[in-house]
Length: 318
Image 1 (cartoon, one colour):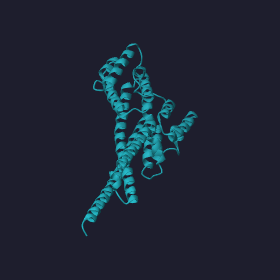
Image 2: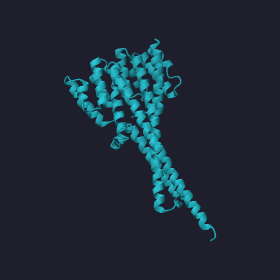
Image 3: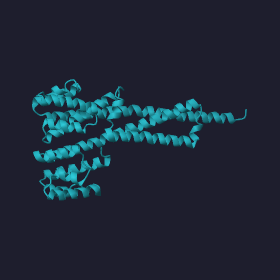
Image 4: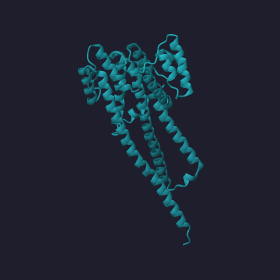
């Protein structure tokens, strides 16, 4: 289950502080006691419990798993691999970066979803007003009850979709729209670029691909990675397995990473590239929806004004 924004923000803060303490040479047990002090009491209690498990000889990943359910399998697996490879501080720092990017992305998603909701409601009211040739229904309590119910249902659907599929199912259903296609593509490539964290944590390519497939909510990308994984097992490179399945830019970056022997860094750069593309496309969609929504709401106000003036004129003596 996908954690809410508060958990993601606290996880990012904790992992950032933990990475700094470990880089300073502080032992894990002491670092757990010191990190997360400005987080919620729930997290602080979980870290205290995890510190006790570390005292008994448990690893950090296993201790966090036993102490709290807020860390998903992806995070715990990377921490475990980093413990084995000696790259724990770097992996914690990269995970913190990933969480912080998710928070910024979610805020922009919510802004776009909010204007989508306003546009939908404004359009419904405007069309209904044209059909009724009146705005008297605006003063009826049942209309506002219906409007509130529809708004809550639409917003709840968006939140449920985001929780279950991280918004990918909804985006896939709208992927044929010109402005949505680049967003779907960028999101998919960002998920693929997270393979960099797995490789830099000490996992092999096949281990990273297997772990990544369990994390990605997009079934189309999962199927593509399964085919690529089979080819890697047969001795082919990852770029050969992804040929024709990913955009040309992503394919070229993966191939360059293989040729230079630093696939993890190339994937990281690919993630930064598509993160910038996603941000640009979302801002573009936001900039398009906002004036259209304001126009729709303005049209409703205009109709209300025209009807009010018309009623006043009709009441004047002839």
